[in-house]
Image (cartoon, rainbow, N blue to C red; front, side, top):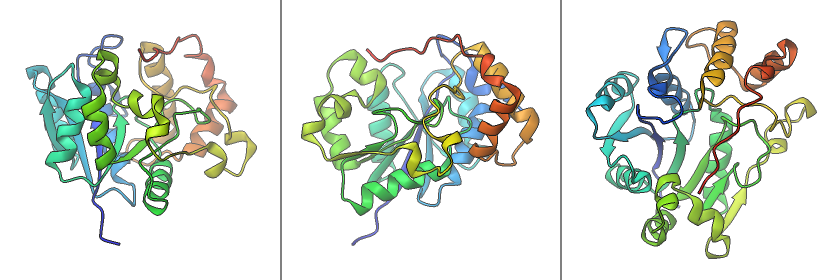
Length: 251
């Protein structure tokens, strides 16, 4: 089998509606964008990490910090997120694309690797852990072949499809070969399975409060292993900090 280039594309921008500038919020003296790019880079299967941001001047700072962290940067249209991601993957000669959103500073490399291996070993079009959620929100990883992504780019014409990138995969599963990664594939211990009650994403100020508490415990660039994060949240009842947040829905 020929070698396949795996490119992880992190979508990030400073113009978030719910929490403006969130990609540069500090977690133990490093901005969120650096934590995301660094953790994705710890994947054994990812060949290149690309931060796909916009052409707005306010996102210049993301290019600077992403580059300093070792990631490549692609800049494109702010509203057409699908197009921005597709063009970035194409520019970097991806055979396999990993989609990561920039609001996941605790993204887990183990989950990314499992999804990539599943896609490649079973010759699939699309693999994710987001079709039926069994992981905490904030560990989202979607992996797809570049060939299938080309189809999605051509077929996705509705605004919500262009904004959220992968609805066409999820709403047209009969057109693709797909698979789901579930928490019991990663965790043997029941404490870590089906923990959809936990939010470790960054959408609102209460999410940031929770993440700051986690990073106080686990340090700066030491990798907070996700099992230890969940244990800490449970022990200290940290989930109370952001449990009232209503998640934004797609479409």
